[in-house]
Picture 1 (cartoon, rainbow, N blue to C red):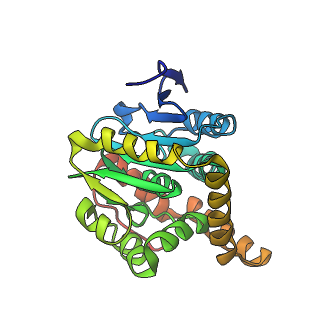
Picture 2: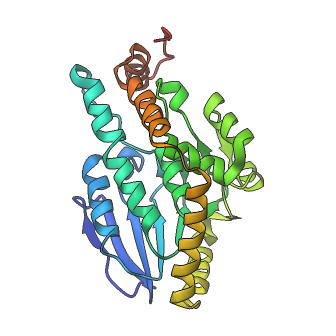
Length: 269
């Protein structure tokens, strides 16, 4: 069905093709790492998004996971705070900003589980179509991580404070049916229908006037941004709060426990 052959970027961990005229599709092809996003992928994503001009963009994963978020598996214990901040606070944020600035509608095709930063990636898209049986979760609490205020704002926008609180305060998995009920996803379809349903949705998007697509998206994004406008000193305080976790004992313990597949022993600082 694709009108172009897939182009590899980020050492083949991201693929770009054009499944329909006017539609570009980005595939996260890092199945070995459960769709995790490393710095090379994030940098390539930010750069590529700035050059695309398709009237609809689809972001999808491969295998059983859409994306497990940023890749914390390779963080080195000797400079954990610096390495974590370098990955989480900068390349990831830049890639999400580039995706949010994309001038035309973006559809997340959730082939599998969307976890942590992978779920934020999905929420940064304008619409989400999910395959039955997937799970969505935000596990920062299990890692001793304070999440970014820009990321949390997306959850508050999409599903409100009560659901955001449950996601972040319990780290529980939400099944796809509940995700649909609370507004985390737009459509839930059988796995074998996911690609055709997503392409039909994209086909409807590109049938609309480009001027309307760009204009309406800009207005929606602008209204959302100004609703959450923060004074500069407050934003600086929230950024500092978030960055403080990278040097904490709990964050170091959370990362070690994740790598060792054990329950963390929290110290509270």
